[in-house]
Amino acid sequence: MKEVPITATRRDSVGKGFARRERMAGNIPAVVYGPEVEPVPISVDERAFRTAMKAAGGASTLISLDVEGAKNTVVLREIQRDPVTSKITHLDFHAISMTRPMYLSIPISFVGTPRGVKTDGGIMQITMREMEVSCLPTDIPDKIELDVTDLGIGDSIHVKDVSIPKANILDSERRTVVVIAAPTVVKADAVEEAEEAEVVEGEEGAEAAEGTTEAETAEGKEPPKKDDGKKK
Image (cartoon, rainbow, N blue to C red; front, side, top):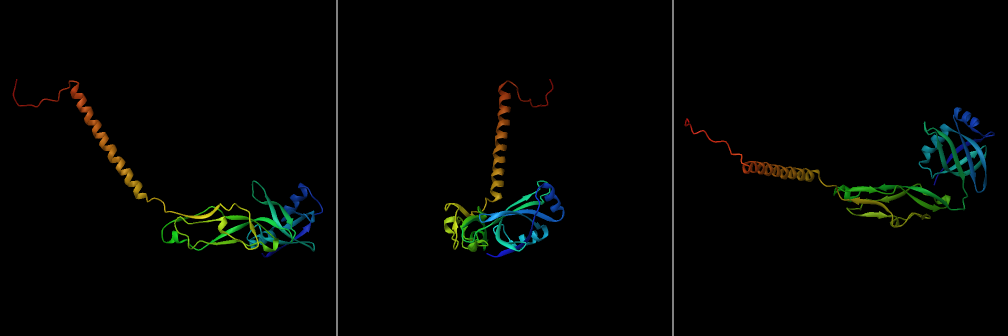
């Protein structure tokens, strides 16, 4: 995995007031810490940080952090934001050991168009967008590529079907990563059922009306007499 360079400067002061002034000057207050590094408060240029993150392509990317000439390989552990403006207010960098395994999430990239979608009108349902893995910093993959081209209706890929060189997958083997579902029911069927229901309701209404007329006759209400033209 590539390392993205970021340059930072030490902060001699801490506290909300100093941090506010740093942000007004276009910098982001941050800290770098780790099992082999004492916590050091630093400041990172906000514009340079955003440019580096675009080049990184993910939070699991290794960062070569240069703090006034002292370099450490780090990962970005936390980004704190203002709850109202979403502006970045603080960064946490974790210095890592190159000889100890790391635990991190790797994004999944799906390659190709499934056969069940392309020819049978199915739907590709993705249930996992990333996987939890354990590996050495030098073996961190940029992403996990899964070829879904040959998947038909009802086919699926589970965690147990995935392998990552030099890395251990920590998610349950039974978890489903992606499945090709059958196409949805055609709306015309629903329309036809509705029309049939209307016909049934109409017939029931007619029968009810006929029953009312018969009831009235039974109660003694005679039907109107015909005029035979004879004068009384």
